Amino acid sequence: MVPYAPLFELLLTELGRPVVATSANQSASPIVYRDGRALYELSKMADLILVHDREITMPQDDSVLRLSKYYNQPILLRRSRGLAPAFVHPPFEGLSETVLAMGADMKSTFGFLHRTFAYISQYLGDLDSFDTQERFRRCRDQFVGLFEASPEVVLVDRHPQYFSTQLGEELAAAKALPVIQVQHHLAHFAAVLGENHLITTPHPILGVIWDGTGMGMDGQIWGGEFFKYEGGRFTRCGQLDYFSMILGDKMPREPRIAALSATQGIPGADALLQPKFSSSEWFIYQKLLQKPNNLQTSSMGRLFDAIASLLGILDVAEYEGEAPLYVEQQARSWFEKEGLEYEAAYPAGDPHHGRLAIKVLLSALVDEVKRGEPTEKIAAKFHNTLVQAVGQISADTGISRLAFSGGVFQNELLVDLLIHRLGQTHELYFHQQLSPNDECISFGQLAWYSIQQQHHSPDGF
Image 1 (cartoon, rainbow, N blue to C red):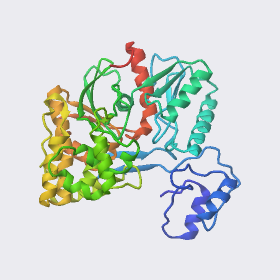
Image 2 (cartoon, rainbow, N blue to C red):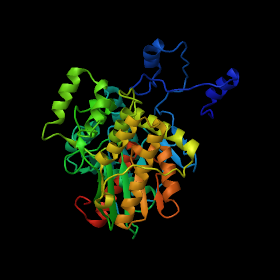
Image 3 (cartoon, helix red, strand yellow):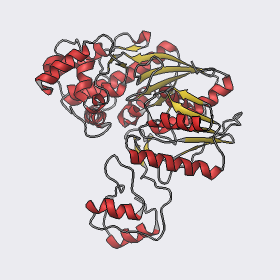
Image 4 (cartoon, rainbow, N blue to C red):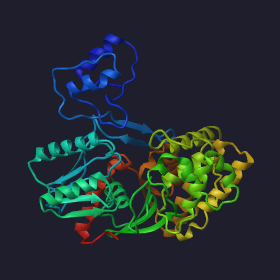
């Protein structure tokens, strides 16, 4: 760690040994940056609190970056101190309006387009607490105030229950501004297109957009998507097969529920999963799964959750993304022994129609779990299956230029496998200055809007 302030330099020099640093906040709350509040809130956790005569006006979390092990591909997990709000991007030519993009609710940022230049805020946290919401408001007002320019258009996510969406609609209504909804995964795709200067490319691009959740154009929860981008238009050309999304926000917190839903009807799965539930839970959840009109999801994040539970790694998560992280770790252990040349995979149905058939995949995986195959091997084969599916859909669409976005691509093993298997025959595009997680949504909304203005398309489809 390089000290970022003279005071920190003095402290580290005096201490003379390694330190572990973390943000000054309780879990799920924004960092505390006012002295009075710090003395009140943090005294329960800290033995000493060092204050300063320089007031903090713009709070920032630490930035977090990882490099993939085999190919050193940079993957930003959090873009904040030292990196934000600086953002280098060619201007969006032809856009004379001042546009405010509200981003998403998890890993929130906002974006501001003024005089054709895009500015992206630092990471501001998950907007599920009042304190974080207030911090988002203050930072947005302060940031926009620097330019002395009021937005003329407001961009929001399609999800009506996102705080960022509601706040954007509130602002637009107060000032009689147009508010435009941008589909979540199109924003992801547009973000990686924009970062790699591909918005005006004459060549088709295949977008692989994998994350945990986003409101789809059909009202279902998307998250395992393939899109084709050509001539300013987006076409959904593939997806993970739908399975039931039950129990709302409880499902992302409990991988066992994702496993129960994704394996519904698969022989042998109940024997693995029933011990993970009480008898009343099992009865109630089975009834819920049999309802005819359940909300459906194509979420790759939930599929990773399901794998974690089926492998006996994790049934109830303590933090967002915990289950996929453990599945990645298990797979990495196998590849470290066998090498990236290990290519065994599960069948994934008939990807020639753009569908990843999770029932086929999970049936084979459940059989191996019951036979006692090593957890690391199963996790590795699952990763290989995903890479092979990308290659197959690329071949079927005839598109060799591939762009990746969504929180699943924080998985550095998956990124390395894609580069290893496809890098020689395909052009691969990853995020450069932004995280693949929802921090990039606000920039993606701006990029999507720029595309629509250039091509006069009403919705991008």
